Length: 129
Image (cartoon, rainbow, N blue to C red; front, side):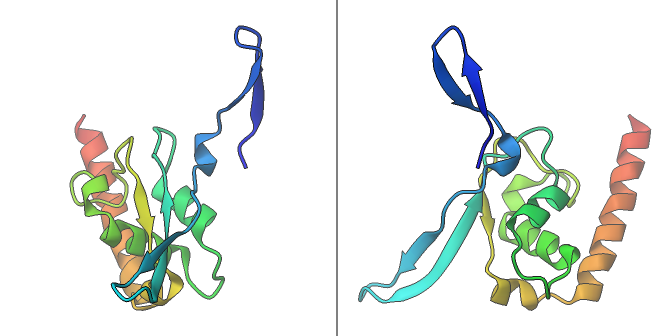
């Protein structure tokens, strides 16, 4: 749910919290009408969004590490990141959130190591600016 703010100009309530832009599920149906899977989306992303925050907000399975969720979101949405880096999320992106079964296919160690590597590369890029 998004917090509500009152607008004197329009006399209505405005919804303004981009951090909670998580949408409802989208049901994927096969050609014969069978249920294939349910996908979730998050977005559009805003300047203050981070992959860590999005992973925390969208993961409901406590058996998964935050790093697994982050890497799964990254892999499902490569177009949403600059420089092939977990820390370079672009603004205005709609992110597909993989289901827990898909996320579980990623090794917790692999996800953690990728996170460390990308963080170091992101810091190096920022130091060059």
